[in-house]
Length: 427
Image 1 (cartoon, rainbow, N blue to C red):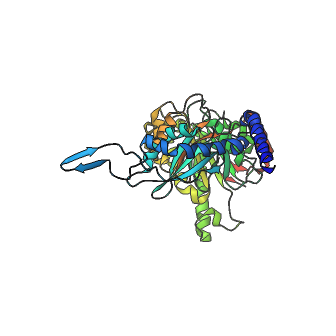
Image 2 (cartoon, rainbow, N blue to C red):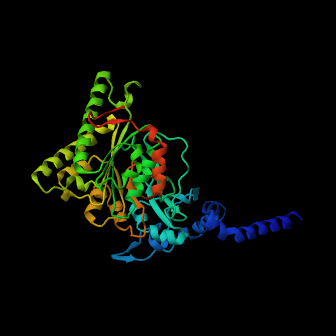
């Protein structure tokens, strides 16, 4: 009697899952994936692996496809090619992953060429191929698009200079860590999501003991939402030039303190001498480099030099740059190209010209450059980013409303270090 009852219970469970599956998939995709999607995908992968790898040419014959008979070379298709060894698919957040062993003569790009075919065979949203040591690749399958409506866990304990700004396409949180990558370049056309990312970054940095400075050459339109939390906001180029000159003087003061204390960074100073980290956010950087008269040329040269000095010296002195703009190209002058070389963190939203995408990603990854140029106008907030691991990924920042930005700025205004404009020092 035990066996029939077991079968009845099993059928009831399967029927219940089939009934609730559509609702789970819409409202709780993570639960649906663990209970239904992942087991079905494992069965599908095990059943189709040999046929899939044979069809796309990843399976190889046990013997060569050519055979010498006398003086005649016979060529034919092998009857039973051997598929690459593959581990059992392992559950991961929002998907699964498996390790595959390369046959002799194969490289990870051989698998990458057929990533879309693998995704269709496994019936998942996408498959990424990641090298996993010599002779192996990791096949990472995404069950759905995590960038459709990115949500991040609520942050209750802030790590210094670390900001959770969105989600990556692999389901992991998108983190901008200024300790690991001190300076960032963010590019994107109008309404591509660039300002949303900057707002998410400032929102995460506002509760931390950090001095925030803004240079917003849209007349302060974007960063003025956070003005109560900013130690200073420069809305035009003359005020930006003065602010950057004083920040360079601050960097020199920190160098002197470190030299006297016999340490190599601001973080190594005794607590009573240590100065708070500074994050300088520059919006519309192209406006800093545009010039029409000789006087403006001198001003642009000074700004370019000071930005470059902060980028070169800032990592050890806790001065960090976040440079953003709609158009950032080599046509703006050699100063921009030299600055770009110091900005290891890169974020590229949808752009209107290939030169801007090249400036952001072209020197680091050709695959990332191609992915960025495929972002459409409907994918607002989606970007291609390269972070501390040197690998690229698609990501999307969380949306911060203007009201939320103002509320955060007022809530943490008491943490704002007081900046003495005339002296270029702060408390």
